[in-house]
Length: 299
Image (cartoon, rainbow, N blue to C red; front, side, top):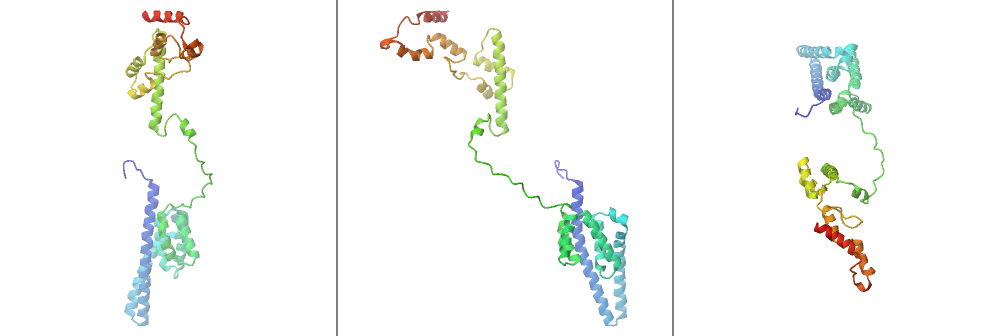
């Protein structure tokens, strides 16, 4: 038994009993052959009028019968039979089998043992009853049913499968909408990025309350100090250049500096060629705005 494998003791006991049952049936066949051989020899001795041989064979047959009777007799005890296991019941049946045709007691014991075997192992005995219905002898039917005793006693064929409609071919839309890949590693990576973004937003808010807007590099440094997140996750959560928005500029300190350094927004630049006659820019259109922004840069 391995460290991580703990077999079911009841299943092991049933399997072991089934294996012993197979061996017992093999021994029964050998005993039946021995009994038949002794009977034939005694008949030959009687035909030859060999009294000594008749007495010798008769003594051997009586000894064999008495030993077998001691084994099948308990089957007539109802209390014993109700407590007998698979092997004990099979042993009584095997002892009675050679004498079924000659002794009523043996036939009755065999019938009672078969009834008990149907309770203990209905799966194997179902096969036995099928073979008996086909006209097989008891020993032959039990021999062919022997392998079934090594299986679970209540084995049965599976129920028909539930019909299910075939899956339609996917178009990829659902998969593309998933925020992460199919593996657990992908899920953990997404969770780490979301955690990094949440912490970065919290740090940015606290710094903003104190009148300071941290740069992406500062945020990355704070995340490295405050968390154990990998560097690649922090880099993805706090990019050096944020994505552009619909308005002018981008929402970073560098973008704010760019807005003050360049006097026009992107919308104003695009409108210039159509707003100025002959394509010549005027010097006084945004003069006040330029002077104010230049003053801010100089300070």
